[in-house]
Length: 266
Ligand SMILES: O=C1O[C@H](COP(=O)(O)O)[C@@H](O)[C@H](O)[C@H]1O
Image (cartoon, rainbow, N blue to C red; front, top):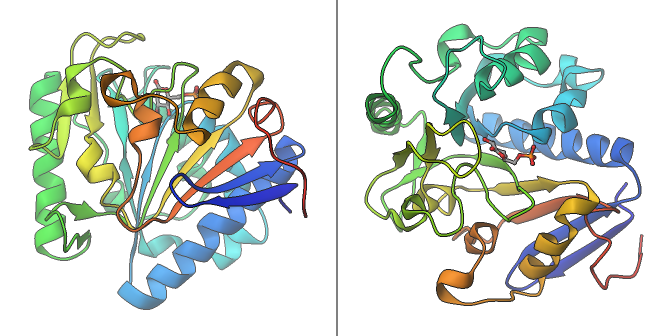
């Protein structure tokens, strides 16, 4: 149960949790409910994961009751961003998700759309975008009526202390990419330097986007996002997450929300 939930016209729904355990339960409920509804409606559930702290916060989805109620065979799993390292490297977002979640549930291996780790960042981004294009063509992934971009059922993001989401960093060219669905970086401000990432048009074309943020070191960036502070190039990447569907949910713990002016209501 969220400690407090506020709906902001511009910035989406904000769910603030008293502790990490409550956040984990609310996040697992949210993902399981979306999975059920998209499996019913479309026969599949296309979910894009991020790396970082998100995976630990999502681990409850592997436990009862979700491990039995979620229709894992209908899941298609993607990554909103990935580090260009081998799949068994500790920096790999795939490895994080595999060790923390995917190895514990019965997803179908061919539905796990991970990056080719044997090629350059550019080639891996192109190959990954090609895979997504094929799945859009066969309507495994829905398509946005507005942008022609893939319309993932759910994109799960984290946010760094400087407001980056996926591998979209403030001031980096990748943030301005409008034509590609997937782009690559060889000079990421945070290590490792080589990464691939969904572009903003793809994130903002998703049916649902959730941003999961915990810890006091992110409270300043959280406040800027909620207050919509900044304009143009001074905007944080997280402030540019504005899905056309308007279905954007922020999952925060009380530390990340500590600079917000929200009174507990539920
Ligand atoms: O580099 C990355 O950082 C973000 C945020 O990570 P967190 O540990 O601060 O939550 C993450 O969402 C992204 O996938 C990752 O590549």
